[in-house]
Length: 292
Length: 290
Image (cartoon, rainbow over all chains, first blue to last red; front, side, top):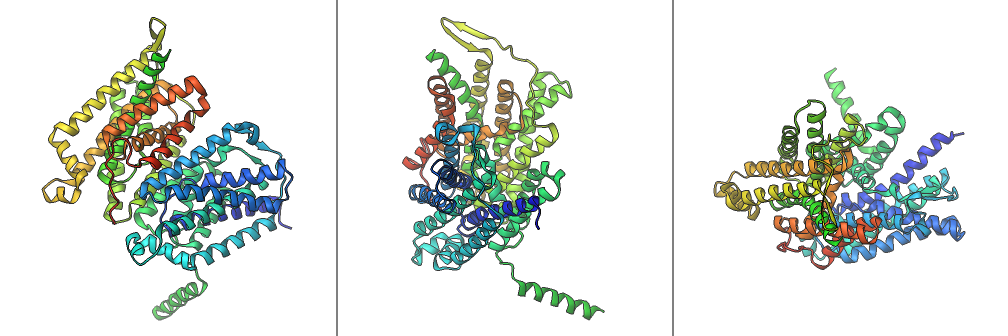
């Protein structure tokens, strides 16, 4: 019905979507800038892949274990570093991401090192990917509109004020950090069982940067923006093959332009809603009618 | 053997120090880490290389062109991007995101223009080594050490002993007060970006001579950045000290343990610094103002 190629792209979009949602919550809603999410993705990917290939554990528990492993590591890291402010937090995530990558390269007997880990069974089908993405969107949406989510937005807007009305800033940041890492780990597990091959280079610094770029293009502080952003960033190079070489160049330009001209990104702080779109068109129609 | 490694390490550290002091200078004024600084260094190397190979300039002139090119790019970043973001009163995080975007643009732009292959400078400094007893040190390493040291001394003099330096230090201490006292803050910032860019250009050319020129060579900025964190964000002397320590540590780890562990040591050092003493070796601990 749907060709293999299209299926492959849809799966890729879904996986990217899950991890971008995590970055969106962290960067867009908590204003924590992280370079470590590719690292968490690799933890989820390797953990689940090792479980299914080496220990023969079924797919579902392996994915869960991948997400939990990433969440656990982020909990430890967050406990140590989230009290640090601004730049310092970013720097630790950067150091962490690179450390994880170098470690996976180094422990060759377990991970296959730089040569990669091959022979992972293909479990991420179209249905699994789409279901996962929908579930991730639902979870992220619920999280953002929960008490904790509102706390995060308060921290984003004014940390000191949030603290003074009784929001436990460090705790909230930690929850946001762990949540985003778990999404990353989850996406990583799906990624491993889609590609059937893992290598530490896949989770390098530019990969983390690309995730942040996607969130910025979609709009800091908009979940639907992040969904649109990851659609755009994943589909553009697929639709225009010749564009693939230029894509990072243009993404970089887009980010710089957006930060300068329209820092709120494609969607701004708003969520996409059908009723607003209808209202917009109705207003247009009225205007058009009045002129005619 | 040990002495040889030590000198090599200091030579590598000297190049890191050129870049790291740029991070420190900019951080001390604007309070953000300029992620695009490593790419400034790469652009400098490419300008010098093109001046030699395409324009057939003699090497000293080409090197000057490279340093000038790097300084210009650095100034461009400040004038047309960072300044506008500051004027928008956007949070500091946006400066970092923009810098990250810029570094992506430069890296990929250069890759599109010149391809991703490694390019070599014609041999300007003989690839021989001096032997004394049982130690052998490359001429290039000694030259690189001397040039880095000279450039750093010039910078240190400019910052500590001139009127310009006084202005810079006053802006670093409190830019609002400085502007009230008649210091032209934007001009000072522009000058600091030029200075940092020129130092990065020197580093880029030295790196290019040693390891060839390629689009991702700006990633060395990451090491330099770690050095500046290790030394204390915003402290120029700390950055230089941190860079020397990291340079020596890398060479020692690669020489005595395992070269694949080299980066792990650097990054672990970074995390350890942040956990134990976030203000670094020589930094002053400043609480972030709300």
